[in-house]
Image 1 (spheres, helix red, strand yellow):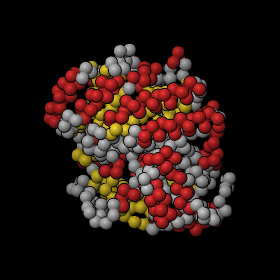
Image 2 (cartoon, helix red, strand yellow):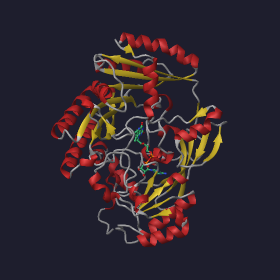
Image 3 (cartoon, rainbow, N blue to C red):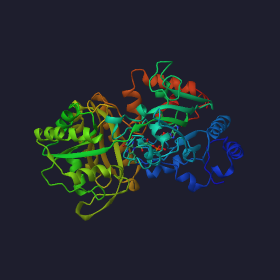
Image 4 (tube, rainbow, N blue to C red):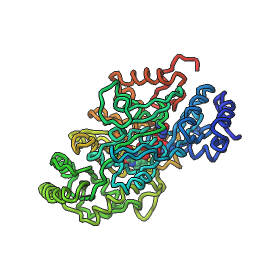
Amino acid sequence: MTTTAVHAGLEGAIADLRQSIGSEFVLTEPYHRAIRSSSAAPFGVHLWQDTLPDLVVRPGSTADVIEIVRIANRWKVPIVPRGAGAGLADGAMPLRRGIVVDIKRMHDVLEIDDDNMTVTVQPGINMMELNKILRPLNVWFPDDPASYPVNVLGGRVGTGGWSLVGAGYGHIPNNVVSMEVVTPTGEVIRVGEGGARKIRKASTGYRMKELFIGHQGTLGIVTELTLDLSPRPEVEFPAFFAVRDWRDSWRLTQTLGKSGLKTISGIFQFDERKVDFLRRDDEAWIPLPDWVQGATGVICYGREAEVNAAKPIIFDLAKEAGATYLGQEMSEGDWASRHDRYHLAYHGRSGGKIKLMAWSIDDCAVQWSELPAVKKRWYEIADALVAKHPEHFDVWGMFMYTNNPFRPWGDHLTELDMGINELEMTPEIWADWIEAKTEIARTAVRHGGSVSACHGGTREGEVNVSCYEELAEGQFELMKKLKRLLDPENIMNPGKYNLDEAYEGDAR
Ligand SMILES: Cc1cc2nc3c(=O)[nH]c(=O)nc-3n(C[C@H](O)[C@H](O)[C@H](O)COP(=O)(O)OP(=O)(O)OC[C@H]3O[C@@H](n4cnc5c(N)ncnc54)[C@H](O)[C@@H]3O)c2cc1C
């Protein structure tokens, strides 16, 4: 075995895991571990060895997961659940090394109940795969993140994910009906609305389901999920409108959101610097004329008759706002490319020069009225960073999307995209980056927003603002008490959300 273990019980844990789960599913080679040392968000490549797990286990059943958790407790070796590893909050990064539990072997559909519109699955299934299976029944699971072809359901629950069509169909917390969870001490529980598996609204007991969504693998491992299905929409209608001033796009978003049109499933804004980035970027290249300084996109889903009735109202509202329709090809093309953005590391065609840069995103939740002030401050912070380190950072502009589930108004997932040259990172430049990220997160909170609408506020540069500023009014203190109660040995994903504080004073 090649390992850089720091856990005294590691050898014992490996022996027990091989015995219980099977040697072929207990992986200790460096290449198996290295690929699971990071997730999709930019990280300091100079730091990667710090998060190299000691081993990887691939359970095939709930019984396997129970065994893994019990062995981890016995030998006091941390475990970190991992889905597709595409999370953008470092959730699946093993900050204290230990055992990565790769759940992707558990990918079966256990039951489709189209009478009651639910599907029950294991956590390693991908949404695209699931929807292929559901298609002949004319139903779908409407979770549509930009990372749709990659993520698996366990990871979606681990982050409490957000969907591009959530204004019409809800987000992950709304669409998971109930779950089977293996707790940090190895017990199996079911959480949902009340105790039933397929009931969407009950008033029995505490609302435990919410506790086990978005915890970033710190409170257990989801081993089975019952999901809410929706009728497959008959038609999809995207329409994109260009404006001369981003503020017109900001106002149009609100007008469309409050229009009362039920088929609207999401509304998106591109600001002037995002439009500029799309003109120069190699991957998401949309060469709009110079007068375009912002855009609003709207997506409708539903029965053809309903969507057709909504179209003229949308066009009239856009016209009144002074916005210009970008045409069917660009509208459909842009919406169709929503799952393709940013996954490549090569970006920017400025002066014919392509740069190797990773994508960094801030995904704060911000109220509509605060967007202009937050935008202004974020660019001040980002531009100062680029001015100091022009070879290491680039500003890629902002997107804003409807965030409120089932209602296209109110708060917006507000995204500042930046390019970061991970490969030439130094500790000093990394420290400047973290400082900038902290200020970006703080700005959202000071304007009444949240550090994260979907990824989780767990990254360096966000986590202190999440815990000590956003969750300051008792929530973080309660999180620590719950963590300590449910996970007495701090086995589950230690180091995340500053929850190690719950164990301070212990001799561990
Ligand atoms: C290009 C791109 C676009 C993206 N767009 C969106 C978007 O539109 N909306 C959005 O919400 N997110 C988006 N993301 C972020 C991300 O992919 C999601 O948040 C997603 O939910 C992560 O799923 P995963 O399977 O990759 O999980 P991972 O990254 O493997 O894990 C995420 C977290 O869940 C925990 N976890 C994994 N499995 C389990 C389990 N079985 N039980 C308990 N905890 C578990 C992990 O420990 C970790 O903390 C995007 C990412 C990329 C790279």
